[in-house]
Image 1: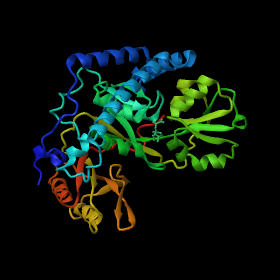
Image 2: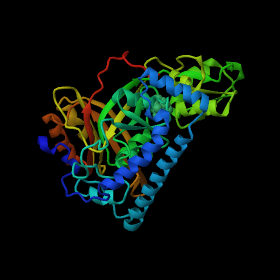
Image 3: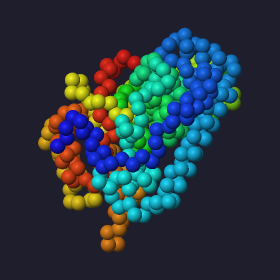
Image 4: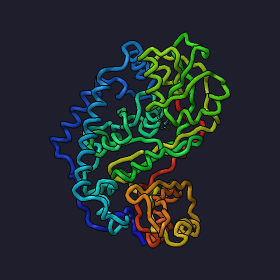
Length: 427
Ligand SMILES: O=C(O)C(=O)C[C@]1(C(=O)O)C=C[C@@H](O)C=C1
């Protein structure tokens, strides 16, 4: 059984060997200086999307000057940071090899983590409280200004400073390297389903889920001023946005090919930057304003209940509470004993704990087990349930889950987003 002080003890029962220690004060300051110099020149990264004056200023600057060179610098700097880290992880893998790793038990998890593929969560011992640099919280998101992720970040942290990042992996690394204090990433959409990249990276990195935001997503068809629907032969957007508008696009009966891009706003930016008169983007009204595009068709998502659930990640977990609705996210693996999955799920049912999501992902370290001449696929199971880790029922349930599984990690226990359905817009 868990006590309040052991809330995240599932993976923390063993002594922790740090693979990377907290950055020195000097290094932290250097990283912040490099990054902020680039960010302050990048109007968009510091724009609060909920502040009309700031948005207007950024729209004006962006529309007439095109994308700032500093954004490229900033992304290059993100990429350099990533390649250094990935290089380091590969070194670790090569040195240690992954062939010895059989299971992912809380007892043996350190072996796995040292392989560089699944990292243990950061703990209070790893670093002191953030942010270190002043009052404003720096929030990193994947995409460019005008992306829904940026709106989600602003909903979660209205006074934050928002940092765009090209790749998902860089978003995690920006927080781990103290360049940002929080990361905001999409996890699932009510029409398009799960964002698998986020699930996979949650386990490979050491951050904790500290919150969630559910954002209504209103997609529009965007094109350059003067362009009509008949001029189009291509539509570009994030694959999730294309999936969420699939039926409507077909119904519109346009002679267009569909192509994916890194983000909805990135697609709008490309059209604006390259003056693409035969191409439309799927994105928000806000992205249209930022990149000087017209809204050709409004509300092209296939169902009006189009919501994306975003996670907020931090270096440290928050203290779970029981005086407000909390959700807990876990991931586990088992060695395929008889009805293990059923047993694991029933520990929640017996305690009247509502499961809200279950997702399985390939077990990348042991994708297949050979049983005789048959191949059995191996999975990691991600489960969300409606209870706080401060709730004794949840602690007992996880105690039982541990009995049946070979690996268990609590990804976070965090407040449920209770904002009324109509109170915030994704554009
Ligand atoms: O491209 C964007 O604007 C994003 O913020 C990414 C993203 C996603 O990955 O799901 C976020 C919300 C929408 O569901 C569509 C795209």
